[in-house]
Length: 154
Image 1: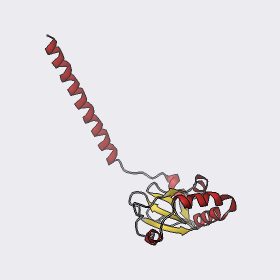
Image 2: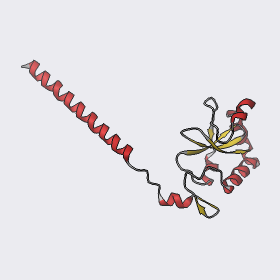
Image 3: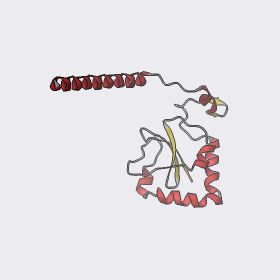
Image 4: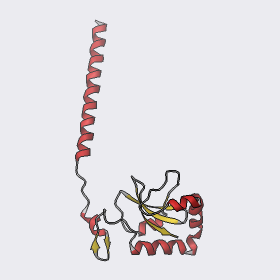
């Protein structure tokens, strides 16, 4: 009697576990197939010279972003932050030569996101792009591929 009860409990646990796995897999597959929808407010907030840009064509720093980044790092009150960030992401001359537009950021190079105070003032980026600092350069790069889209020397 006890062995048949134990077998029944084990069998029901296996069935329950299998049904949970199948349900979980189905939910994940449905989420992958869902189309990506870009919010209309996000589309309207990304503008350069009065023209709307899609995420695919916004592969350069805007004129406003360039001016904000340059003024932030040239300001004397931010000089300590600038020096600290340069020291943490310092790279050799050979690595600096590899940082070219349409090339890839090497895996051994440490990147650091821009300060939050500066990043809040810059234009909105789509999720696949990121502004980072490497040494004395601010780089706009693709997050997944690490491809360099634009560079500003500070």
